[in-house]
Image (tube, rainbow, N blue to C red; front, side, top):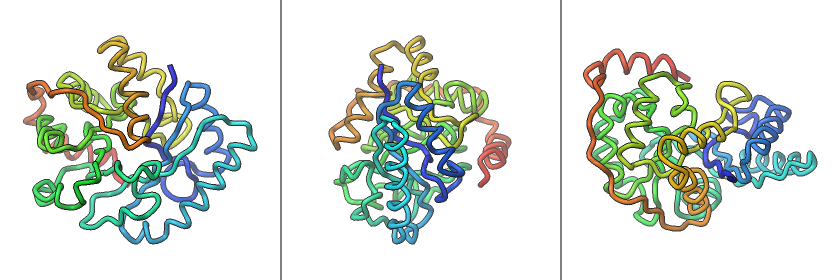
Amino acid sequence: MPFIDTHNHIIPYVDDGAEDWDMALSMLRDAEADGIVQVVATPHVLSDSDLNEEKKYITRFDELKKRAEDAGIQVKLHLGSELYIQPYYDFKRRMATLAQNGRYFLIEFPMSMIPGSIEARFFELFPTKYTPIIAHPERNGSIINKPSKVRYFVDNGALLQVTAGSLLGVFGNQVKATAEQLMNTNVVHIIASDAHDLDRRALKLGKAYDYVCKKWGPDRADMLFYANPQKVLNGEDINIGEPFDFIEPQFQHQSSSILNKVRTFFKR
């Protein structure tokens, strides 16, 4: 089964991902060996000023493509970004939407929480023609504490992208439990690597795919690791059906300790 990865940090010298060209190429070789056939590079964009400097990102992305081709790597590369939540986005920028599809964009909340002011105004921040994909919701402190919070976003048209490593326990038991809760309630649209390196956060999806096949079935896995990511690249509609009822996990009342752990673990 081929995979498409729509979230990773393989472009060197732009964020906290690949440290150099050698690491970037090694990550792509690992991806190819793992069955990944297409990759959308999504460097962090922490402010609108970063988008104003997108030539830097594009230049390095183009160099990565050239180096990968020269190395004989067959993975097809696309450019996008991971946009940190902010009051304004210039969607005319080439890297604002994934693979320049003019529709889907990847959005990141603060890891510790979703501020109430952002939650209340979220769908006012961008024109309705653009569809947000929320990155790693299962690793957000507010959602760990209350997974049903995602219903507001999904019911209003946002998509959820869970990190493969979360389902495998890479980020701890509470993140894993939250990821599985989202899977069980049918609100996950895409699974991606969020790769940053060659070890703990590698550009691989195979183990997570096998896990999803075993727990939720191969049809669901094929949809989340290939069919829906392909629709994202094409700018096509995605519909996974109606969400199921949420049953909040037992650790929902441990909010302060969870938020402290999340702040420590994901502190940049």
